[in-house]
Length: 68
Image (tube, rainbow, N blue to C red; front, side, top):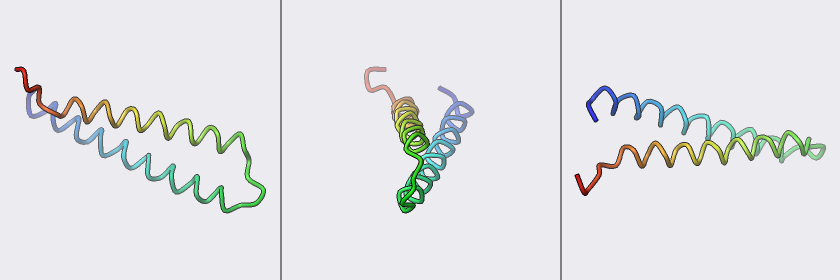
């Protein structure tokens, strides 16, 4: 993997982490509301889990292969 790919993956990772944090903030704000939309909450939590999985995939690509 060359430097351009590493830089692109690092930027992707930063974007995913930022979106994950933003969703966390949105979820906390919704939970503070006593009349929370449960469907919206479920969708946000599902997206947050998808982002977590994507973050883990990108992080695993950034770790060098020890068998190489």
